[in-house]
Image (tube, rainbow, N blue to C red):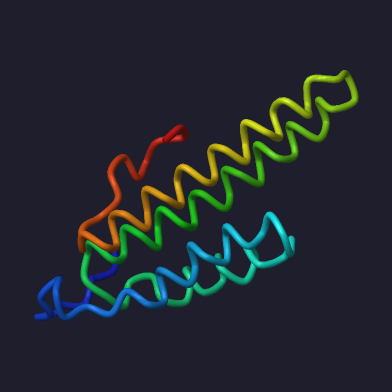
Length: 120
């Protein structure tokens, strides 16, 4: 088990720009396509370098990426039998909701709720 660095920063003085950029990159993936990959790499790089509540955002972003990748692959496979398009639409809604929840948590300087969930 690795020790977490101790930070004396208050939530008000913590810079949330990087986490905000990662959420924006995830949403930009609907237009550009590859930006979520860049976003998850950034989240991996910055994970563990801030206060606990901000690290939870990075963990939330990483989980959102990997779970959406899994859901996307399943939806593409199921598109062969016709249900995949509906699942891709549901996946898009799921990613948007998670990113909006993350943005809201960053604005409030708190960790996102239900980080470990596979749903919202």
